[in-house]
Amino acid sequence: MTRPVNPDLPQNLMALFEHLRTQLQMGLHAQGIDLAPPDIRLLELIGEAEGLNLQDVGRQMCRDKALITRKVREMESRGLVRRERNPGDQRSFQLFLTEAGKVVHAQAQAILARTHDSLFAPLDADEQRCMAQLLQRCLDAQQELPR
Image 1 (cartoon, rainbow, N blue to C red):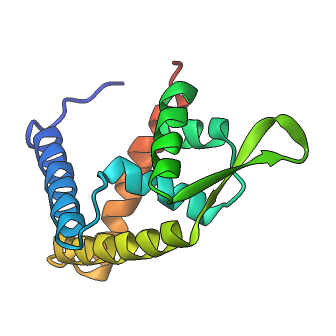
Image 2: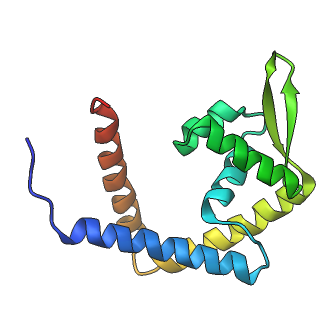
């Protein structure tokens, strides 16, 4: 059963995401970090689970392997990520943050936390929890749909 969607909902959600992206980008720029939010997400994934391969990262970022490969090469050239042969599968690589990558990752996470704190400050803890639950319900319903 399809219900009509409040027209403010998609518009407000897109405005919220755009504000979040803009504030994150400004925070990164202010710290001298020349990366975009998707780059920060890449560092975050690798930092949280070092040893991921390109396919794992691509799936988690919903991007194809070719794009992730280019991004990883870019991060390697910046000295933020390193690739190592996977000892269990010599055809693939595992990804790790370098020491410089760990520093940038920590700085970016602090900027992201401040951005989130500012953005969601008008909501009390219960409202934040409710919003998170409602958004998760929407995401869960999408996973049930055929693709």
